[in-house]
Amino acid sequence: MAQRLTYARTRVEHGDHARAIEALQTGLLHTDPTDDLPALDVATANAAALLAELTLTNDDPSAALPWARWACRSLRRLRGGTSPEARAALKVLATVYRRTGKLPEAADCYRDLIRHHTLADGPRALPTLAAQAILALVLYQDGRCVQARQLLARATAEHRAAYPGHRDGPRLRQELTRMRATCVDQRHGHPDGVDDPPHLAAAFTDGSSNHDS
Image 1 (tube, one colour):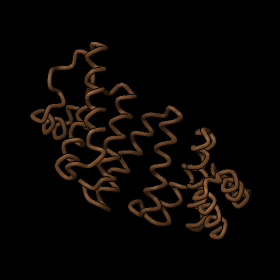
Image 2: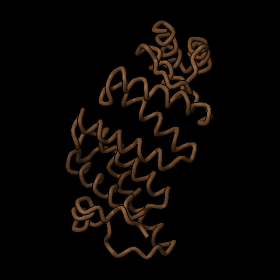
Image 3: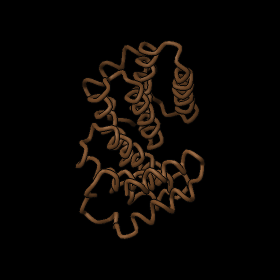
């Protein structure tokens, strides 16, 4: 399986997803991703994670879901939740959940990802802030716009402070502006300034951001 995984990764680097998928599927032919038993080795778990990612790239999130779940569960047991492999698999699973419309499950995955990135890299690391920003998008998509805006506003402010001039800064600010404008256009009636700096500290200490109207 380690050889198949290396071959598949090489094919991906050359843009040959079809052969990569074929190699992974052949190696995992006798594996049932819905089984409660995790993978016995890291190579098999990583192969499942890559298969899920490539299947998702081919626009088949439903087929990717069981492989993503199984890979994530297996790598968490084999490597630990903060390992790079487990975090990569969790990111794939979160994306699959989002693409299949399972927004609460996606949000839970991104919360776990934020926690693991924080433990591994720190609260202001780029992967941590990126996961916070995507969680905000998921929450907004799920109708929890106040919480989403507050989270994105905080992530945007921390990103600007830690990485001034970074290319992602304008995109974060534009997305926050879009959220605010959508709430106004749809007449959500949120109090003014719910995502302004003076309100953010209270929102993330007393849990008030969890109660959207």
